[in-house]
Image (cartoon, rainbow over all chains, first blue to last red; front, side):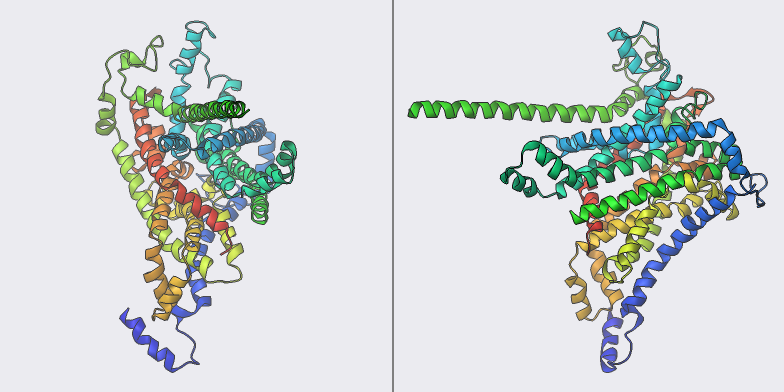
Length: 313
Length: 295
């Protein structure tokens, strides 16, 4: 503090001199931003470039020397039925859970904005699925869907929907396993969607709808010409975040089913991990993971456009 | 006539009152249902954690009740005979270092973007936030080669190095939001009082941002504790694992799951995180939405 006050008379005495570095906004802006930008460039942009390079190479964990291999990895991926299965599953899981996340998220958001006693406790319990590390909540579900001791089966047996001594084998049959994976995704991302929508819905001024009502617009007209256009961008942002976190995730599949039974729940991320880390075929894994990128880019652009519409509206 | 009117008004009032009560009941039913659905797996985990083996492994027993006296043996086992304390310690250790790196790099970056009025501030802020959406599943393979090249494989330092790439983008965005909530007069006054721009930032702005910084610490620490793919790909030895990878992979011997201990561990990690998150939820929402407001 003493040094800065001592410097001041000196700068005041020479008014034409350039201000010291600590006062030059242009310099400070760069000096402040550069470390973060370099960090991200070095550990996000560079690895991304490397991932693209790997997908055209023959790098393996055992032989990390880089040799150009052209499109071989992609050709091998296209010839592999598991790849197509994973791609299809990724789309299926993402689409279905996105729709459910948005619908349930809207319901949950409406509950959370309401006024009631014990709201703190309800909010705490509702946040649990989202804030718990995915791998751990998946372990909780693994036990809930256990092949013998699942309490869901117990309830079904008690109600009489399945015969005594019978089990559903939630994770052991392809259709049920897929439904289980989707259910876990929906369960864990609905609170996030609800929080996003809550924040967005609170920001929409109420008087617009009241003005429309005063102007004599009926319920449906208000619904389609006022409410939906105002709410849509917020819903879109929530949906896209839900989609991104679903299709890039592999923890749920990894913990619940390991891609099984018979690769019926394999997704791109888990398949890339299986090939690249466990199989040691880095190049092949990188080629598979790269298919996440176009989807991601599309989602990111869509988010930007939706956010811009919120700002304008 | 007058009696008719008041009777009509009373009827109307009663109808509104009934509708109001029905609405209130609806809200409570919906809220309780939502809370139960969201917490169901954990509630069942909690019951499981205290069950005896003979109680748990009998499909005929009611899984939601204690059919035999509750026991805390499995929770004790978790702390004394498994690596859970090591996982917890590793997680805390990694989180502390990652949060420190995040703040040291993120605070100045957020200040530059929110306050120093460069023409590129807006697009740059969005670009940095977008990095948050780049998923680990896209980068883990090349990063695992980089980690090997740096000699950090199987060490928690690899996580300390890589996790800031996840936490910095979000934190910069949040901090930008909090900065926009602090009036510019504060640092202008500090500069009139003789501080340099840098001095005003360090001595006047950072102390005022304290609540925002606490929120960022919580958010970044949560992200760090939740990450799974990098932790799984970079670190194989049990004694170096974090809770996120250690609990699902190491509390299993062959095909035998230590279910009670596993569920106890899950609940022990889940509850504190959700608790702290709930405390800060309003602040997170404020930070994220303010970040999008043009300053």
